[in-house]
Length: 175
Image (cartoon, rainbow, N blue to C red; front, side):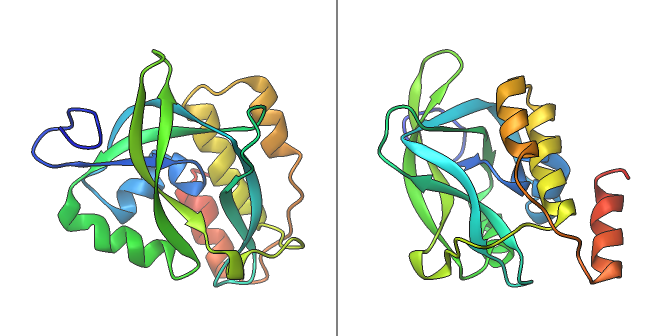
């Protein structure tokens, strides 16, 4: 047992809510990632105010404490030996925290997630089009509600001036 769920031989439970919702992106970072279930994180709001190393906005499950707020995500497990790869991909602007998530079955369990460090939050940050597309594709893939998809689509975006990076990310999304 790890963090209250049986995940087998010490696998780490991860709550993914941003671009890691897209399984191919997460598995490119940590090949051992295995999907478990959709999950909700109560008392948090999905915001794109984390300042990325590329100058754009990235997703953050911002703690509000309000019972009306929730972030939908996906619970994955991963091999602890690969966690340093994910730490490197997430970068210094995120910190790892433990949270309690709620599965579709109503079961609560603890998992790890990456949350924006306060010093890396920029209220004016805007994600690149391709970044929001990862989050939206992941949300669709996991069957999140149309209301939640609308919230993601309503997030303003900007074009990435690095044409090669934009092309590679669109290609990774199948576009």
